[in-house]
Image (cartoon, rainbow, N blue to C red; front, side, top):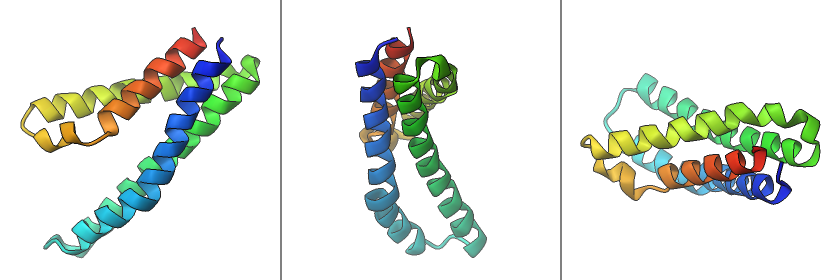
Length: 122
């Protein structure tokens, strides 16, 4: 277990939650509200956006718990897996025609979180 790696991953996740929830949320909702999507689609999109924000915050908490209480480290394993597979999904979709995803920080931040947390748990 490595405290510094785990806390670095937690910091990335916390920063992501704050930025995603506040700054990204404003940009995203402006784009969604200005679109011609149906009201239900807009509402479900908003829920999806904020569920991911909650995930980022929960990840920061789980990684911090693992750093401070090593006996509870298993709580961080799902966070590593979700970040790893999330970054792979971003990259796969980005290379499969959704090129805008490669310009967004999601793939890189999730990969960095997975790497740092994985090294911290190792």
